[in-house]
Length: 417
Image 1 (tube, rainbow, N blue to C red):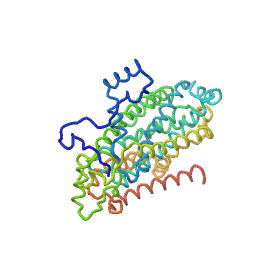
Image 2: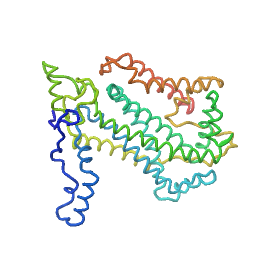
Image 3: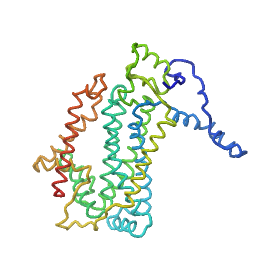
Image 4: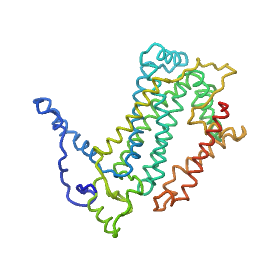
């Protein structure tokens, strides 16, 4: 097991300076003298960047299962790609019903990198949906949502919901046929909320019909409101990860000796920050074997993120992003189709008569979302192994299977496959 100094805050010992921490001045070559080195030293002394760098690079992580832990950092990288590619698109995009389509058409036909960047933004969102879903599944299987990581799970679930919201508001912006009818359908969904539904729909649309106010408000949601909430959730999620450490899975906490109590006590004595986990049961407070984040885990994170970035870049170049004809509210032949990640919801609506659509959207989906959010407070058993958690594993498999089944039905209905 990695042997490191116990965190004074956790052990009650007097604070000491970290050993071999280094500082930013050490990163500047000896040949560079004078103002540069002095400036770096001054900045490090005031801001404490070396301490933060040391904390990030040399946190302990469980040795086993490191490739599965890369999904969290990959999610962060993919979100950053969405931010940077979105900023590039904003340089040309005009949020106007008369110019939105033409501005994106200009990107497609006249800007050397415009079509590629739109493709990166689209495929980045697709990949982000898949990876964040896989990350949530890994967290569920390993029971990383249990005490004391309940808030890690809750912030992660809300982060996923915000990403879904950004995806659908982004699909409204091109103002081609697909985005116009997507906007019409999506902004009409709140209408089914009893009592306040019509008011929400009117507020979002800026009137009774989809128009300039609708596009402006969807644009504001996409680039300001939802990203601000997203960044706040990311900050909270990272803070909670630093506070409680990476749980990994049950395999990281198995005892190997004939004296399990003594082995666990030894782990607690030799714990490396951020372990022992605050508020956790002793058996799950320190993994049996840990490594420093740098270089072992950082290498794995970098490999997985690099593969995903290359995939997005290649798919953005080869496939790009579609752009239908200009929006036409008078068309009678266009059949709107939802994005693949909304196919289960679209198919669910088909099962309900028109008068009960609100029930389908806000009761069935609402109950499912609430159960997912409340999972850490529902599953209070100390058991971590998935096979020994049938009371939550079976409902989860049913939910996942239902989503896949609805998606398959939706594909068959819309594409006649």
